[in-house]
Length: 115
Image (tube, rainbow, N blue to C red; front, side, top):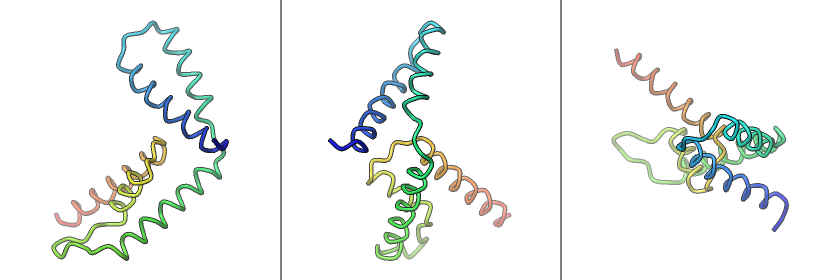
């Protein structure tokens, strides 16, 4: 396994463990220890996340241009971005949160526009 694949695999596994542990009643010291470990493991160069963001954006734009659109209401680029994250099995909470925030902003602006 290449270093990048190994890193993603480890992060994905730790993400699953983190989800499970957050649901459990553990002593504060144990939770803090796990939190420190997870914070260290999730550090990655900013350029890596920027590169992934650009790649996902390009894929979403490609899908938007080349897939048939519903006639009633075409899908927005943010929805294609969410689809891209699913297809690429993206699990990085920062990227997923960014996409969710973008969708929320668009939804709010559309609601305000319709009023």
